[in-house]
Length: 117
Length: 114
Image (cartoon, rainbow over all chains, first blue to last red):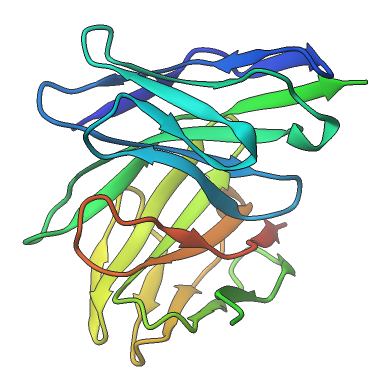
């Protein structure tokens, strides 16, 4: 089974500063990678995903992530954060699950981003 | 278009009580999922369904049962609640079997078992 490691459980950053949230995965086969965001007291929503092609993936709200196969990483970045970016961010990998044609998401433990005014 | 909705939003149970969480989606999605979220644990898959009338176990199925009698609804049941089931429960749905499909999440149900 594949696994996802989010290296930082909490990341404080000042408003308008850049941020990088780190994610590493374990896999020896092709991977499909996702970043989801969870705002306080809400469900998760997709930020971006990497399926194939360009290794730089752009998502919503100015976020982007770079797939690095040699380092098995999929770090999330934003050049200038806003207060509204305060949330928990989850990295996830799609992998085959029991049953024909079934794919499931395996999530990392999450990184809480706190933007300081 | 409401997306994925969950009922109720909050619930407090006593140990041994039973309850059912309802998830509904109006996107005509084939796949539906139940996750639980615990602090520092991320999301863990409880059960999932690949279509109406089918269900399957996920990573942490013990103590839960599910049913999918209608395509748009996915029910999660706790027959005899335990304090270890205190958690936030999320339902999600996705269009089908394509590996890159996005999962769409509901707002969650916060369950406390005393």
